[in-house]
Length: 138
Image (cartoon, rainbow, N blue to C red; front, side, top):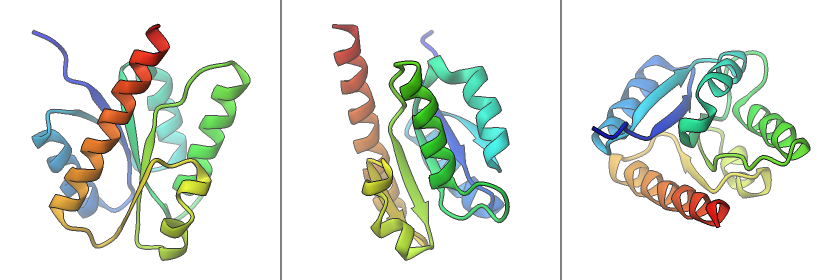
């Protein structure tokens, strides 16, 4: 049996995290969940090879926010010539959502969100991630 692709979910709001996890699970992903940036770093170190894509919240209520964490991850990866998994920002902060592409995100979604919108963007993100993996193997 083939292992399900993993998604790293960085979300500090329990109810939102459960909703996002449920939607990702329905799409066939194994969700690795972090509630803060330090935990996300630890989980990326453990599961990096298996992470297909990343979903982050914008504001995490303390410490580094989602976009800062993702920028740090991209910087670390760039320094060692590693490709960073693509990511989607899901945030109630409309300013962050507007600037998501400039911050390196492939997709952005405003909270509150509809399930169809989340599923559509997650599907697009998975396609992007799989295409990037194919390119790297060549």
